[in-house]
Image (tube, rainbow, N blue to C red; front, side):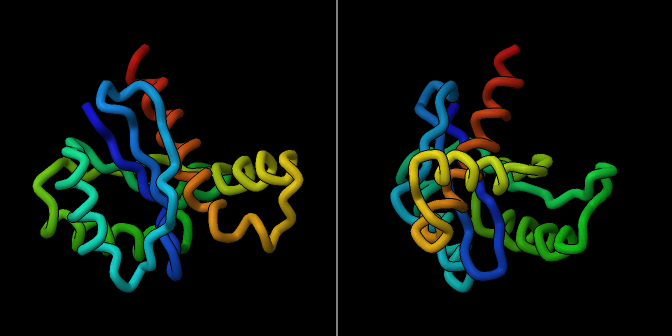
Length: 135
């Protein structure tokens, strides 16, 4: 089962997709601009035969929904009207930090991380989801 993960942001959305067997997560080669997001995600779902979309839900350290959670929920509701597959959410705590740390370890400064960091965060989130699902 192919799964698509989204790291929602007000400006851009990071995107990662699993292999067809739903075991390995790969970042997409580009992020999606939030303004055109639903149409682009719909195309990705159709072109890659995605069966499920998971979106990072911003939570606080206490596990409660964070300040951006309402915006993410509104996006999820809008997206569900556009795609035929299941749409759910995941806890996204620390995925952006982890992505930044991985990219910094590869020698990329903050400016060079910007265009890919959200996709790497989506990949981390998706791989965690796939790993838990396979247990």
